Length: 344
Ligand code: SF4
Image (cartoon, rainbow, N blue to C red; front, side, top):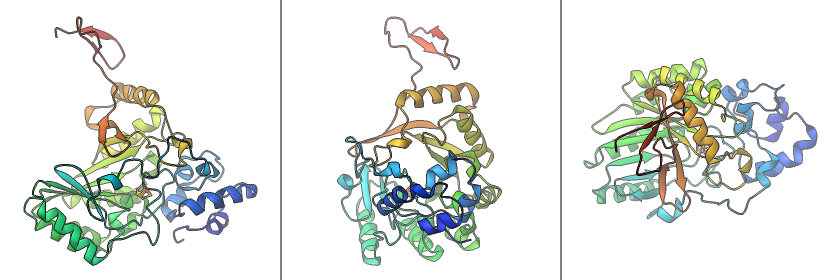
């Protein structure tokens, strides 16, 4: 089965439960392309109207409802882009976005107005200019390849890009963010592993995974191939209503990631993306979930709960806090909520 890319594909695969919903789904599909890989389509329980895998990838009429606070560019990429394909938000690191194509289109995506088939990929000249920008800014220590999904590049082109970055002596770390090993694990073949061969600069791979069911046997095998090639892995998860906003689900996901040799890195508070209000969780709920995880999981399996400040002001941890706020009598809260005095 190829990747599902149209409403007709979804209907043929029995993923549209209510024929009356078609106009709403079509309206959502006009805003953001559809792509559901066979691996993800196979995971969807057709009998469950609240299936957490379907919820991430199936268009939803709710996407046409735009709240006043929602933004086209919620984390301010454009405001921090000195040249096409580069976002320079922090002094020591840049994002480099070579393409906007993804293996799946996640309906909550923070770049949902940019990503898509035929999206605005960098031409060879634009990529050369982006590399020149990195070369000429010696303060850049880390380059984060993102997009879109960089592992959608042909392995040879990706290898050339990694090699070009490797030749820039002040770049110490190349980090790649990808959903491919989880949603399209077949792409992690010998050619891709060869493209990912670490060079002088350290190569890290951040994978995006939101639900334990996504970690299929094939996904685990792909992650194992990457880890066996000497590439450290870390996990990024978006906190999403109706997908993973339950402590049992997050706990299982974090355990499964660690057992697949993926260090949980960030739990992202959902961004203020236009048409994604149905995915949003309150910060209080997110903090309560993090507190519950603290009591259940080892430090190795704890992600940091972060929020990207709208407008391009960067990412910050948003708790929960374990210090009481009375400066005269410092109190530390333990994982079960009991407070203890501390001589501060
Ligand atoms: S794979 Fe990443 S960039 Fe692509 S649609 Fe999903 S969240 Fe967005």
